[in-house]
Length: 435
Image 1 (tube, rainbow, N blue to C red):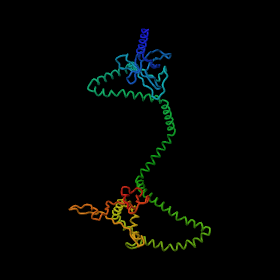
Image 2 (spheres, rainbow, N blue to C red):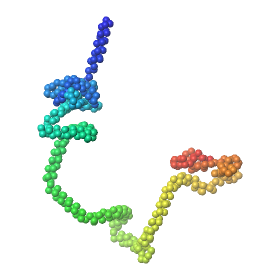
Image 3 (cartoon, rainbow, N blue to C red):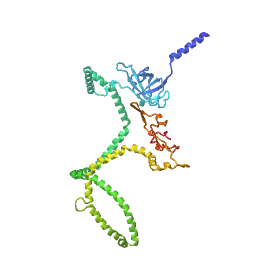
Image 4 (cartoon, one colour):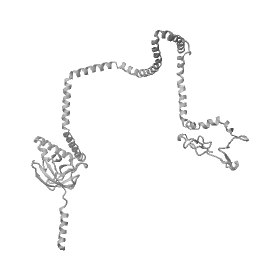
């Protein structure tokens, strides 16, 4: 009994060791088997991921190749027959380009047609498409290239040849993309042909258009000096027009009462309005207009508004630095003015409420509540000036470093004082300094 159990265990171990996993099998259809034989490897990036199990002729006279892979395929996968080198016909392998990771898995045993398979191109098949004269030229070209690579240029040529694979790969992708765009390319050629036909039908009109445009451009070129002068005068003209329109808007606002009065005058009679209302105004306006005209322009030197404005022009160069300095000083004092604004009640109360300091009254009479303070008190210690101590002032408290906030000179009231100006005085005064 023990011998039977031992034999069964040996058979089971041998089965597990030598039989291997079942893998995933798929059928690939190629136009040409390209000298691939059973046992050739399937590789991804140079790493084996499976092998060719069998090759047979399909009903469509294609090479039906069965492969076994370690991992299942995803939709979008493709196979290409490649060669490791030209030294042997037994070193072909299948290069697998896996489908996207987010693509669905393919069912085991599925068949991939020519859309997903590419046969290897043999060198003799390539040269068979040329005639004898062309093949002889290719032979001479190859021999000449061999002589180039055998000479002094071998090192540089080999470095250049290293990039030929990437160039051929890019060319292949370009041709594949052009092949996929056949329909759109045909439509483009068709539309281009229709465009050319339409242009041919309207060619006389286009000729006249070009001729007239040439004449127009010639006329413009002949007046280029006038056009340049007009373009120079256009900006100030537009600025003056803008000013005129702005003034016109204000004038229209002033005319509104006149129009309303005209409406009333039309009801009562326009003649009466002109005789009784407008005529007296015009009579009174006449001396005023004459005076304004005299003010604007009056015979004699330095006696009218025009000459005054002309005299003010030289002041511009003198006044400009002064105005600039004033503006710079105002800008520099913004921070101090902003802080002073918060102390405005303290400053004005110190002036306006000074007499109210003695308003307190009790039985003996009026009294004033005062608190003597002093700042910056010092004493001489030998040859050194030091802060004064309290002994020489009878034990009074010496307050130093006063930096009160607005309203900090009286008893604090929550939410009222000291005043921090909405946070603008934070860090610039001490709200804890209160009586």
